[in-house]
Amino acid sequence: MMRCLLALALLSSAQLLYATHNRTGYISYEQTGPLTIEAEIITYTRASSRPADRDTLTICWGDGVCEKVIRTNGDGVPPSGVELGDDFKFNIYRAEHTYASRDTYVISMTDPNRDTGILNVNPPDSEQIAFHLQAMVRLLDPDTEGINTSPRILNPTIDLINVGQVYAFNPNAYDVDGDSIVYELVAPLQGINEPVPNFSHPNEIDSGGNNLFQVDPITGQLTWDTPNLIGKYNIGILFKSYRNGELIDQFILDMELLVRAQTTDTEELEWARQNLRIFPNPAFGQSVQVEFSNWQEAVPYRIFNPLGQFLREGQLRDRISRIELPVQAGGTYIISFWNGRRWVPQRFQLL
Image (cartoon, rainbow, N blue to C red; front, top):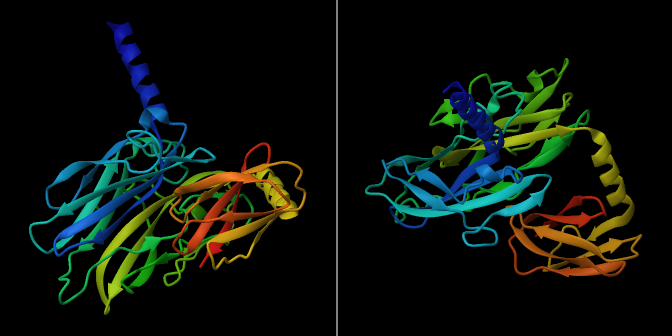
């Protein structure tokens, strides 16, 4: 009997260990009718944590209705998401819901598997804390108030940070309704309006004196001056939308910041600096050109849109190569090049 209990305990521990996977996420939505909402759950997860991979998530609409939502991006049936490199997987789950009446609702998703080893969330047991995303939506009268769409984040919300260097990130968010966006640092959540326990801002973890961590409330620019301890951190950024001075929606971006040693990134940046030039940047048409000064053989590349969705792949087959892009929205795009050892990401703007 004791052996059985021990075996079960070890199995449960192993499942917890390998089931941790949520890195980053948020919920966006669009009001498509007087009482109808289309919502998207966006997550970035650990690609290597396959036992915890989700082809469905449960969304709760805030009116007592919860339902399974199917992942919609990536290959396969059901779609398997898109692996981005550096142990990141990008996932989109999309669903539509019609409410009984016009009101303000909290849309939410809770998954038990937050990433492991996060230094500022319930250390050293962050994997025991749920990963919760939520958005507050107010249904408007389309005839008198217009519709309500949450801000769209154009930049991928994942990043690798060099220890000892100033870090800056901007979500490059915009609101199609023209509403004003205000940004605020908050704690990530483990339940509806329930902050994670034992949370500290990243600059409060062995950071030394005069360490700055802040978000500009108007531009959304996140600045960390300077990360001093290698490891994982999670933060919450609250996006609040105002129309005519009145708050009409808000959501929290739960974002993982991965601080690592400089050596690998420095080599990658130097490789890119010496070999690569993307032009024009910003690009105004439906193509960009890449100059690879030390070109000797085909160089594989992959392109991702501002939401992190895979667009296309190919190879640079000459010193200067033109890459055609299908009709795309403006924003910051990622093009990753294979340097023989790993994918090296570069950014370019499409206007």
